[in-house]
Image 1 (tube, helix red, strand yellow):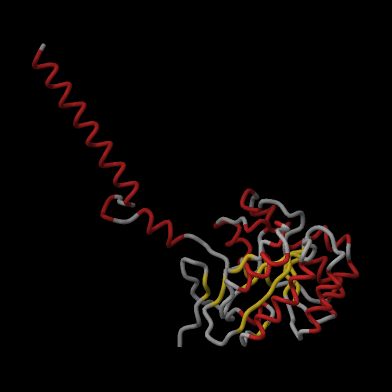
Image 2: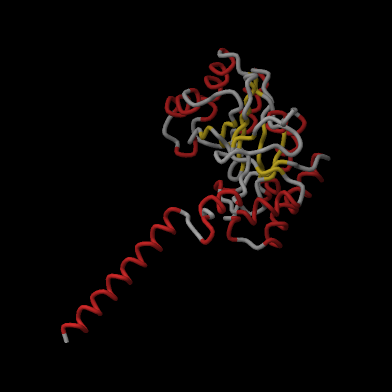
Length: 258
């Protein structure tokens, strides 16, 4: 009986050791042949562009438009007063509700990007559903403005490899942001302004919304500050580098190799 107990105890210890080794392998990213699982997954991860590695003080400000339009004209008036062209990401049902505003955005020299048709969590969609979300809205925008969007921003900033790969295959450049104004939280003018001005840097893509509570009061202060620091606002398509450029693991687009 003593021999059996010792054997069972040794067997249990061996099993626990094996479990421990497997746990270390998973956490450390180790698999057969010494390949790192984590490294392999990271290498395969598809990323949108969060910001751009630039040294020329160019930045971009963008406005997502999904609900409401009352402040859109006021935003464009402020942008015009400051000589700024922005990028507006429009949802399909917003385009349907405000076709004149869509046309006005383009007519006043701003860039229009695609923000889906129904504002879903697109990481949960199939490739066919993703293509429908993208192309339905692009067709609506093109019919109204004569220009088909090239940029695409996922609703909620939600994405996975399938979404990024499908969007690229359909000819879109997926765009996120590096500075979130958090204007949608409606925390007040000062927090909104500070959130942007304390985080902006060359190559930044700033996220705002076209109908947030304090955007009309905060926007002039944001533009004034950035321009006083020598930043130049350009549409996102002019901020990013053309062609195939590397994107690092933080989503920063790198300059093209010489």
